Image (tube, rainbow, N blue to C red; front, side, top):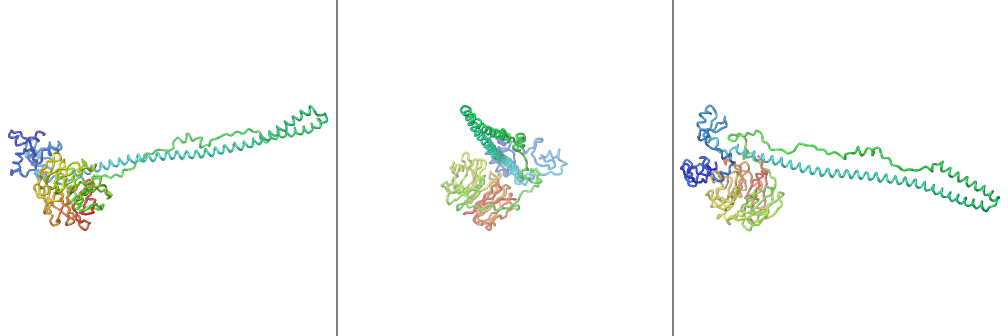
Length: 561
């Protein structure tokens, strides 16, 4: 397949080896520069859709392997059998599908497939799957966070419980120690008092004993006889004193002991845990987006795709833009809003709460802006200054300036290329690899106007206030006349479903267009606070529509179907 892509099919048939530069989707072969010109001029192939080889090669391998030729009969697919859900050549129909009732010309089946409900639905399916996965991831991350918070809280509770137990035990210990010391002091006083009485008696007996020895040695017999009576009485009194001590239990030996309370005796075994860690589960409150009655049919589907009649707006926030003559606006992935102010030559970055985050000053006139999420770069156009400025929004410094040789206004980015409104030079594209500029559509575009991109389609506003849709090679898809509702349209953006929003700074309104360009209706007007709405931007990530008046105020809407 790779060699088939890189070699011109027409030249190869003529035994000439020339590299292909474009791929014709209808002819299913590559074309060199010379054959491309003939191919575009030929009546048979002038309406064929061609894409550059470099862009075509970016398709997945399984898509590139799909051919328009039947591998069995080597004939071109011309019929689609709905019964067998398969493409058929004429011989397939004769040999295999002659009894099948629903056979359609394959060109009728695949017509407008990229704007069909089934194709749009698949884009919504991807958005839905990504959104659900993001919700699940956030729910699990929140659960991890809550587990950590629970662990920290319980850890504090355990420590507090330990402190409470310690405090209670300290108080019990203090009370018991007071009781112990009081009991000791009480017994000490009783024993000390008894000891004092005994010591007094000891002195009396010692004195009597001394006197008795003196009497024995020096007193007369008469003196000794008379003294004996008194000494006998003192001895008797002391004996009675000793007997009284023994009878009154004053001689009992006091012992202080300690007996644990019954509850404390079993405490070491009973209190083997301070508590129990409980793991509980609750159903997740994360709700997943799930549409009903989905049918996985790529070619034919009856699924409902939101139309412009289903569209509902809910005003979420009114924002002070901090500037006058606001030309363009944008919503960053984190929800912050950007407004470009022509007069002050400043770019205002506003936080989600409406307060000013910071201001960028380039020193140039500022017209339109576009944020490249992958590289976190802000692209700024300068109108008549004919230059594109690329700013590193994280470091707030100018990284690069590209001169394009023409006036430049609205701008968008895709795959390393910047598509822009070049004024009288038309719709152009500049490559970020080598700064080369190519004219995509030769049309005189009005100045100050935005352009928009969705999938592989570009949208721009013409001088007569009509809106045109083309592919990335400049091939016209559709044009819708809006002069009856618009007089000076300037802002344009596209939502997830391919619905196009256009703002008019003179009619003070916003109009929405269906994805196929067949229907339109007014969405907002001056009664909704619009006063010169010069710019608007649809945030496809969060389904929000930002509309900025020329001066002061901007409005952020939630968009629902």
